[in-house]
Length: 342
Image (cartoon, rainbow, N blue to C red; front, side, top):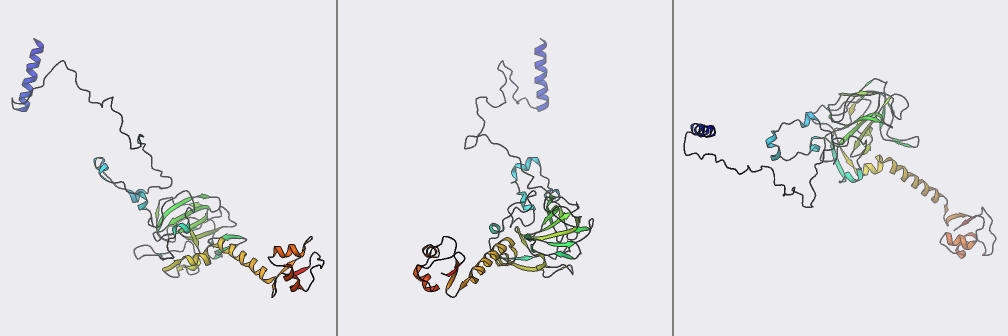
């Protein structure tokens, strides 16, 4: 009797809420409610290769996200309707470089990256902060070979603790301690250049940070492979070091020109120090060989155990030709140290 009264009360409440008696009433039966969970006989959705999908986390070690550039708010409901934006687009000169590496000092291969014979580089734009000399000091060592080692930068004299500033507007790619460079900061600029500031006593910026020309990025020092406090300053294009003194007047602290044309020929004849050194050694050896030749041909120095036949074979000639050039007979005895025209 009590159950019937409860049922009548529920029906009356439903009618009062809907305002119509035509609304279908709930039907109670002994049938159990349907399970809303997925059918246990159904298998999880798989990719075409039959493997379950694995979500990989983004590697932010090599691509650190800069909040000031990438800050954006999206509703969670609309998140699936938007394509994921490539974070590399937020970094300077993304059209030239294929990566933003915050761990490797020089990860780029110029020969693979430089696709054209020449490129026009504009150093500053009217909308940016222009150019500032990193530190106003005397140049103590120039770009080139130094003590049988290539020196890819320009050394500027300073005292430990002096402030070092960015040469151009850009974004910090490297800010860490390195064995050779010591405390080093590398900044990439929108024109494709990267500038290097090495041997700092203290780093005052971090990777992913936007800086302006003249902004302090660190303090001068004597860290890494360095003998005495100084700033080692480099300019690089797609990984290739170039002579900063070709573009910067360090005495006046200004650019020599705001726009230059950079060519492969420049690299081959001026900037690729190791290749130039190898070429010079090869040319030097060729000069030595040429100087040892006479108008009759190369001069051969007889070694112990040599015969005219062996000498002729080694020098791609004949015994008759050797005898004729030297005015000797075939049966002439040879002595070590004797010089023969071959």
